Image (cartoon, rainbow, N blue to C red; front, side):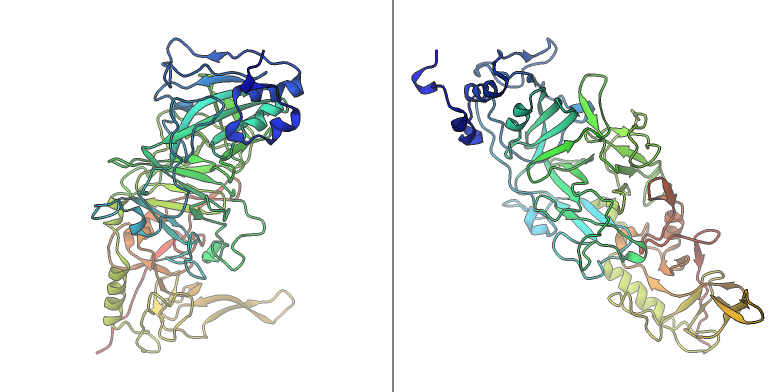
Length: 537
């Protein structure tokens, strides 16, 4: 028998109720309208799992086909100790107190946004650098579309962590749990069976989301990068027509307390604060009965084998799951079968970690690592030192000069050029093309390659450009080497290090590339030592 305040609701009244005001009894009535019966609540609690909430809270009701599992303190999905963004507690069960909703997501590209009252300096977790743009997008960095993003401590924490898991067998219940104020991950096992994991606010972490979507919950908008840095990140259209990057590619959680540990997870929350893995997505139950899964094209991570700025050596590419576990690569990028679990590796980012989103590759640099790389001011000083040495063309005897760092795509008449096969530096000239006989007979055809007048070796002839993105340097050494065949100039340690890194390409290919423009490296080593001729006087 229902009390005066708990009268039986009609079907129209149930579905007109605000989500936050649907009581357990009302929700049971809603399900009974479809299923025709209401079952008693049963909560799964093991003897080893301490109750997360106070025992004085009213018992939680359950719906037909819905089993709520209460997570113990400190327990997480498949070994990951935290998860994502900010929300209040779900009102399916009345908690003894409501957590305050965290602030809306937004980019913290400017240091003052991360300041607390009384703080002298903002806390920087690190920086994400997109490979292939040499310090700036083609049309300039604007808002959340940029080639580089610094992550600072937020004024208020917006992290979330796993809280409750529901096994759903009734479609209506799945809709009832789709609450825009509650973060959740939905695993669709079949048309009639889903697993929904609710997340609750975590005041100890900040969350940042990365993806192709321009919606407000994405902190760093990234789209496909093509060779020579002409991809869709921040371009005129903003996005590629056939992008392989997910709209909600990944999320990064940073500990708000020292040592500010940073972890990465596949997939990000959408505008409904939900991560949805459909029937065709790779997902599975873990050995402890929990759920985990992979995104369509995956999120790959490679940690350096050694110290990134010390003795850099490439590590092994791994795939990160939705719950932050580490797996070996799938046979192809979007294969249904997951790789083997790698138990001795973690999703914790370190200085020099590479993150591949299947279309763009990001480099993570820590504040300690960035302090050992040249600043823009130092790169400008190196440029002035090079020009002060007055290098000359060995043929035309004209003085060469590297253009300013702001002049990145317009070739200057004094700009040095190089034969990438041998490394001899010249001024620009329009002769020396290699010719070969055409297929039709005695006519000669130009191959596009040049013959060096100093050593007679044949190869590409390209202008030299200074690498302007200091975060891609491995040291502060002088710019004595250049990548082949693009001609980007940097230190010897930098070219040696990056020439050994296989970057993902397509669904299963890997190839070393210039970090400044994304061009595939060629030649025996992928780089050359530059040979300048000094002034005759």
